[in-house]
Image (tube, rainbow, N blue to C red):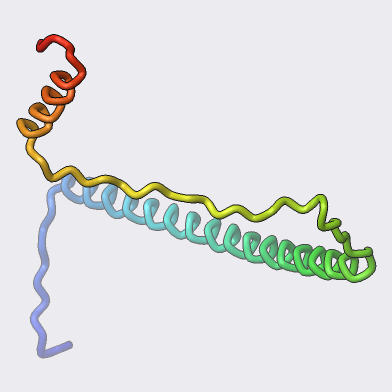
Length: 119
């Protein structure tokens, strides 16, 4: 350090106070961020514990359901009461490639063949 030359910077009193205020507000903001991160970690650990409890409850419920299904008699519906399976018929869509004028002509011809007046 002996070889280095020290340089001193003079600050005005107001600038020094403003700089201290800025540093303190920055430090306060960082402390709030650290506090928020700690709260987040606590909430995540609580969430993890609750998920483990939920998983255990679901696992016990599944074992109980399987045990019940194994012990309960199976229901058999007589053939008479069974509904026959019907396949649902989906009508195919008609694609009209004709122009509007040709469709109007066809309707006009049908009206003429029925003997109604032209509109």
